[in-house]
Amino acid sequence: MSEISVLLPSVLQPLAGGQSVLTAPVDGAVTVGWLLDAVTGEYPVLGRRLRDETGALRRYVNIYVNGDEVRRLQGLETEVAAGQEVLVIQSVAGG
Amino acid sequence: MVGMATAERYILAIGTKKGLWLANSEDRKQWSLSGPHFLMSEIPSIGIDTRDGRTRIMVGVRSEHWGPTVAHSDDLGQTWTEPEQGAIKFPEGTDAALERIWQIYPDAESRPGVVWAGAEPISVWKSTDGGEHFELNRGLWDHPHRGEWGAGYGGAAAHSIVVNPAGDNVHVAMSTGGVYRSLDGGTSWEPRNKGITARFMPDPNPEFGQCVHKIAADPAVGGRLYAQNHHGVYRTDNNGDTWESIAEGLPADFGFVMLTHPRREGTAWVVPLKADGERIPPDGNLAVHRTDDAGSSWKRLDSGLPHREYNAVLRDAASVDSAEPAGVYFGTRGGSVYASADEGETFSEVASHLPDVLCVRAAVVSHAG
Image 1 (cartoon, one colour):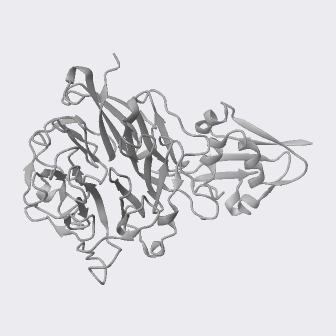
Image 2: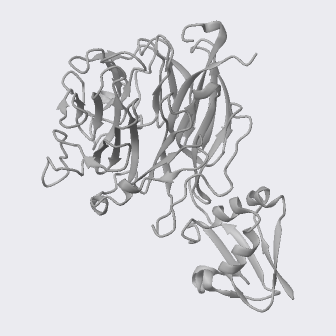
Image 3: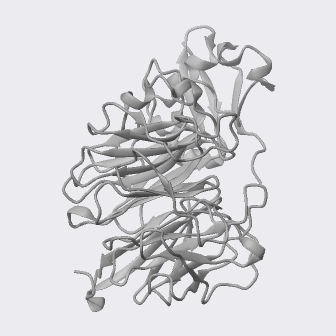
């Protein structure tokens, strides 16, 4: 069994017990949606910051898999495998 | 309790586009300010619950990035708690997601755990545990009119909730949709807009669809409510069955604010703006107007307010407290906040140069020490 790591921006780290990286054990490829479920299971407030109650990614939350934003791939159905880097970054918004 | 100044102090919670500030005062003239709390999140709704011997401040918080949530503090803002699963969450099957909490309304003294909320998308919620968890009001959500309710300029939301002391009559106002009334505590709802115009619609007198900006109940006369409409100021004396204009004597009939006195019959405050196309105080002269006779006449109140002010006052950016005489508070989109300890006769500045003020709520609390 391997692991996939999700890197969090500093503003969200207090909601993950101060951690900058959350990991999930995986056995083969998983979807980004599955990965978010796995890493936010213990941190439901963090989970709500990333996705709304329908499960949709919030508009100004971007998730990158190996440098590509998942909306340009298959969204939360995008597959990710052990060893790939998953980044959560807030996009530019507000004034 | 009211009037024992040595044992009480006043708190004023100021929700802005970029965070929450809390002001404290012993005389409602000199204020000390703390904040920002929730920096970079907007605070469009605040409820201060002083029932049951405690003071709980509840805030609707919304981050552009991280979405909306409800938080509460039982220690006057020193610490905040957010329920892990979220206090307001659309249930599965609705295919809806919470956008913004527009209203947090603690119910009557006789129902100490009950708190109502109004939200965007247009929905009403009820908590029975002091605002920690809310349930969607299905009667309104499943209403056959819902598909025809529209969005006002600020979004489509239920922004006003008024519950009578017996708890069976609930009035909700939404933009746009108008006033809806329930006679069974929120189980079923009917539009109650007769007499309120909607100039922006092909039929200016529709059954529903009005853009009512704010409603408030008269505290002493059952069945009497006041409404500030998107053009038009109204009163009903029959629980919303019919509304009549009380705009005569005001410099303009547009605006967002409607406040009523905590105890006294016939007293209400509005803050007129020139028009929907010119959302500034008439001639740039900011003033509050008060009626003491249920809208038959209005008195202009501007002592202590700036002579030039071009910013609007939003629907929830005004509040009264429960003291005697009642305090009146409001904030502008220019970030100025004003307080009156004498029902609006004179104002003093609480704060200036804050971000746009979206919501203010005031309360009288007991001295801690």
